[in-house]
Image 1 (spheres, one colour):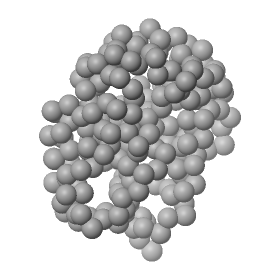
Image 2: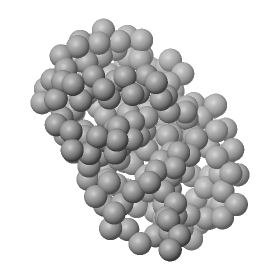
Image 3: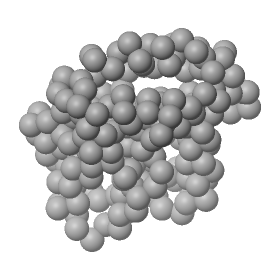
Image 4: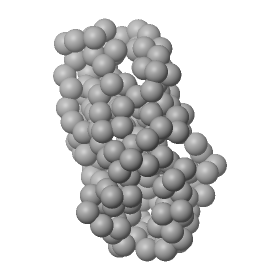
Length: 196
């Protein structure tokens, strides 16, 4: 039996990635470069996947759009594979990534998996629970090729969790996750294979 193809695909470059101002995490669109990356990505698919999965965030919709135009018959589903929003929404409103850096550093310095920064944010433990849920869901899928349009923090979480499936989600787990992210950066609009 042929192993299924599962691709984790980070969205194309977003306005926030390019240093622009954000309103809320869900509403950040692609930059002009990100739109071009989405077109190039679609050209890399000589055959359609059996299922396209997107997050609820607009930048994954925009990244998947050229592929959906190329293969309009492919079913699309929205799963909870959105980015880790660890800062409260008020920290995002009309700020750049650089302006959010002090708050981001303060969050990660806590190393507290259960801490929630406020409205619109989730805890690290809940974030990893979403990664666990994705892996459990993939284990039940019968599709032979699934392309999942998601985000860099989430992709890193799935990869790190798959390497440490039984590990307790504690301060050491967070340290390991951050070190793993640093050593394994996720490129925009670049499919990564995942073994379920």
